[in-house]
Each structure stands twice: as structure tokens, then as C-alpha cells.
Image (spheres, rainbow, N blue to C red):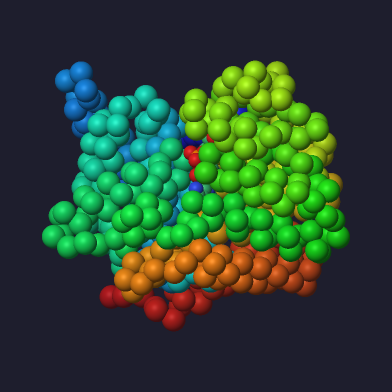
Length: 434
Ligand code: NAD
């Protein structure tokens, strides 16, 4: 089975390399399906991905060599609308992971009521090792190879780990050139100059903050007095740190692929952002910022904080470290950062988890706004985007919370209960073709 290649070890002696993100996703589905008492027919139609494609991408490198990269696109479910989901460029991408990420997209869109289905793509590559020219050729080849899958009414990609607005722009340009029309709605997360939306850059983090504000009201704590640790300092993580710091929270630890940095008095997030814009990663921040490098970056997750924000990759909190997690609230900006076994441990401890399919849905929500604006050809200002995002995230949080309280189930299971019900209803109304 394909694997995730990050992190340490689970106590059942399986390394994280052997934890299947897709198996974990299916376990989450099963827990909610049991509550909904879904029939085998209902489960058969929505549990597994509808389309899975692997394609090799031969790319001419700058030195004249041809290198062949492996890539994937998975459409999990399209009952509620076109497939929607990012494309990841990372050395640890594998089919199991892309299937899991596509699965979560289906139920994320349904949790927040976005009329789209679930998809995800990935290329096995370390984008930091490519020149701009190589990255552009790889991006265009990926889109061209899979062009029949994509389209504003078929499947609409967006950025994920290792991809960015420039790559979305190359995707859009490749599709538009093939079709002979300007078709910005084929991809979201584009730069503003070519049909991007105001607020898309920080949308994932902004949506998480709206959820956290609701959680703070429910749990009766003050975000201004909260301490926070953030794992991952890319789009989701750095914007989370920035927004929470501007809300008055104390960010005591941050990390990225180069290491973790800790200051119990609070890290200067503007200084960290400046460091990353100059040096690509946080490496060296122990000298430019007032923060100590942590010996073991995974220990960031175990710091005594009020709020922990995993914003990197899957399977970071497992059965082996779950009992050492001290955070009162975990806001999952990353997809799948907590394994089901770890979930059980955290549930018993009373940790309040805002699950990924709710917590990080601000990204896909503003992607949906971008798609709507592209199709109208009329663009909203930031205030309009943020006001609609706030309304959707706040309402979705409250729906999940009331489902959780009504059935006495975790926020994660509650989100899946709501989402699976919506996808099942749509699939049944559409019926089976042929
Ligand atoms: P990104 O590429 O912008 O950033 C990823 C960050 O994680 C980088 O700072 C990288 O150095 C760091 N990282 C990688 N491995 C790490 C490790 N082992 N420990 C600590 N840090 C590590 O990606 P992103 O878009 O911010 O995505 C991060 C997570 O958020 C992913 O799980 C993604 O699926 C999820 N997410 C992103 C969006 C979005 O709109 N960007 C939306 C929803 C969910």
C-alpha cells in the first residue's frame, strides 16, 4: 500500500510510513455511517472514489535530461457539483494520500454547503528543487495530460501543499489555450490579475479563525489570552499565526520543514514572515528572530498551549503522541493531521477538536466564490468576500456543534454525519444513470 512519509512512530509499531490516510478516512466515514444507519447500497455509491487516474509526466530539465514524474488526479464524488480540490506537489505524494484528500473534499464541501464535489491531485516532486522553467513545464504538462478531466463544470483544481497562485495561472492558461477561450473558472486560487478572488490567499486561515471564535464562545475562553502553537508555516499555517497574533493571541511556537522555533513569551510573527520571504523557510530564525530552535520539531505538538494548529501534513498526531498533547483546542488547518486512534485518546481527554472538513473549509469556500465571480465576470471586494465567508463558517460551525451535542458525538463525527447525509440525499435524488 502507498504510504505517508513523514513523522515518527505509532505505538502499534507501525511506522507513520505505513499509516494509510485513505484507510483512516474510511474509518471516519464508517463511524458516521453507523449513526446514520446507511444501507449497503447508499454506502456503495458514495464511499469510494469514482475516478482514479495516474499519469507519467516526461519533462525536459534545464540541463537537457528528461525526467519522468508520476502524477495523479482523483475524483471522489460529483453528486453535489463538479469535483473540487487542490493539487499537491510534494516528494511524499502517493495515490493513497490523494484518494484520502479527494474523499475529505467531498465531505468538506458538503459540511459547509458548497455545491461542489470532491477531487484532489498530486505530483511526486520536490518543487523547491526545480527551476521556474522546469516548474512551469511540469505544471503545464500535468494539466495538458489530464485536460479531459478538468473544466469549470467538471473538475476545478486549486492550490495545496507545494503549489501556488502562479502554478494555478499556468494551469488556467494551458486550459484556455487548448480551448481557444479565456476560461478562468477552470481553476481557483489564481492571482488577482487573472481572475483570482480577494481574500483567497488567507481564506483557509480566516475560516479557521471564524470557527475558533465560535469555539471560544462555546468553551468560554478568550482568544486574546490564549497561547498557540502552529505546525507548518505555509499558506495555512503562516496566515493562521498572523491572524491570531493580530487578534491578540500569543503564538509561542511555529515550525516548517526546516525545524520548530519556540518562545514562551510570544514569537514576532511579522519577523517570521519576513524571514520566510527572504529565505524561503524558517531555517536560521533562531538567529534573526527571538526564538529557540526546538531539538525535536515534533515536540511542538506537545507544548502546553490553549490552541494547537496542525497546518502541515497528515498523520502528525497518532496513538503514540496523542496522550502527550496538552492543548485544550485543536484547530485542524491541515487535512487528516490526527489518526482515528489518536482521535479516541483525545476524545477521552476532552480535547475539543475542530475537524479539518469544517475547520479548513474557508479555503474551498472562497475558491467557490472565485468560481462564481469568474462565471459572472463580476468581482467582489474583500469586505463582501469576508462577510459571506464569515456567515458560512459561523453557520457551519454551529450546525456541526448542535449535531455533536444532540447525538453526544465528537465534532468530527458530527461533521461527517451532516455531510454524508447531504451527499447521500443528492446521490439518491440523481439516481443511477443507465
Ligand atoms: P504550503 O505548501 O503553503 O505549506 C506547507 C507548510 O508545511 C510549509 O511551511 C512546509 O515547510 C511545512 N511542512 C512540511 N512538512 C512539515 C513537517 N514535517 N513539519 C512541519 N512543517 C512541515 O501548504 P498549505 O497550502 O499551507 O497546506 C498545509 C495544509 O493545509 C495541508 O494539509 C493542506 O491540505 C491543508 N489545506 C490547505 C488549504 C489552502 O487553501 N492552502 C486549504 C485547506 C487545507
